[in-house]
Image 1 (tube, rainbow, N blue to C red):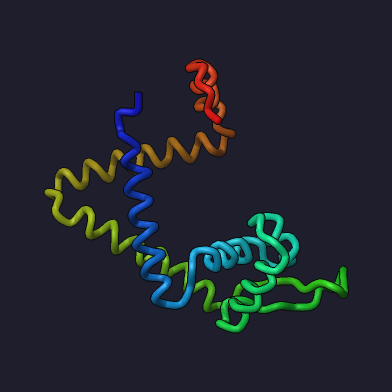
Image 2 (image 1 turned 60 degrees about the vertical axis):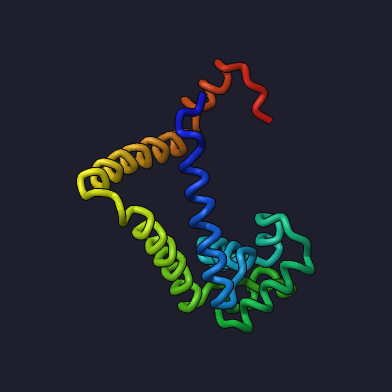
Length: 158
């Protein structure tokens, strides 16, 4: 039984909707942000690798890359290993976009906590930090403990 009512997920979904709405006003959609995020974390990635990672078709990848290049978020450089392809790199503007997204999310979370009494907010943030680090350690361990719980419940999870 999930005592949380999946409220952490639901809150994250609401902040994501707000972030998308705000970023669209700046001319960047979710799919474009995902594209930029992948390139930022994999400098010099090929468009083919982006396509495979994001599971999008060739035309969509080409349109997105061209759009992001024209908006100044990506640059293409020749691939020395393969003259037929180009390598994609994020620009400084893309780095600023990452900071912009984090700032938008931060504003939402500050607003969300703004009416809590100081002591309640501090206790909540301390508990949240504990849960965050526990979940991060579990991911780094390959989710072995959580997978064991799923096995023990006998739930068909797909």
